[in-house]
Length: 404
Image 1 (cartoon, rainbow, N blue to C red):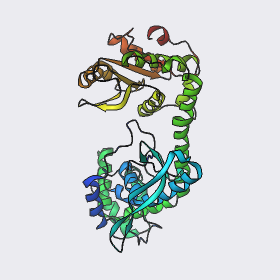
Image 2 (cartoon, rainbow, N blue to C red):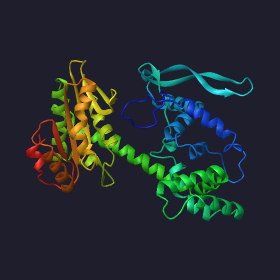
Image 3 (tube, rainbow, N blue to C red):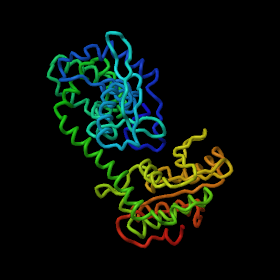
Image 4 (cartoon, one colour):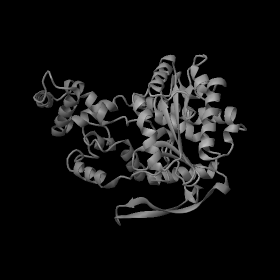
């Protein structure tokens, strides 16, 4: 459902779609796990997330895709009401939309006309914040397996409790590893499907906690990717040399260097913290950097995969002018291997003329670790390796003098 953006992405709004595997999984589970769907007796409601509890390949992306298609009519009505109230006439138009609702009498999908905002001649669907979350769904397989022992112990059905425990403990012993225990738990759940309903019942009892957690995650995402980036651009980067124009390597290096200056000398490091904690995932760092490239005549592609694995960014102006930019957190355990091998492989596969490695660290310990790796690999003093000190404590970092 490309019209609908459910969050921030490094690559755009094109996904893989639900596909045949999801369809087969749903069809199979409708005859087993979902056989009482809509008429449950243990749980208070019906949950699509139940599908993901047995099938590891049915993750949050597939569930969100399915949900978006399922409530497409609601999203269209919601967006139309918002559009007529808040969107200027110049940014909206009427669209005939296919597959709005399913008519059970005629057994056909119906169409409808809606007044919607548009971008690049295509309509946009808005999503209420109240139904968004980040990371895993509240009901998910990982959590189910983590809670399995506690779940079996608290089962109100004595016969089911005895059978489930007997089945589970028959598969394990004192030498059983953690992943083997989880596999045994999953096999037990597959045999006793009622365990899924009792797990969901337990989650229902803590539903308010789910809403609070989801709301907090969405607020943190908004702070990180909206408020913090707006501050970085408007207070530090706007009307500066950051938005000048040159060839791909020169402009990429200039932007990285200026970003380093802003972060280390002008207080820009604060945008990489949420609730006092530094960025934990490199994917978040990639998105934040990408959002600063809105004013450029270069083509900036994220997570480009040319057959040898994805690279963070490929900045180019045609095939004759292309550069790669890799962002890494200093705490990354694979940093040494990446520095030693990865970029040269990417350059060859992407036909790039140059590459830049950016490493962000948040403590003296992380800086020392990176410095030792660079020294060991004889990569000291290179202009295409840029260290950025984003620590909260003001300090003079050797990286400012050694790496530019």
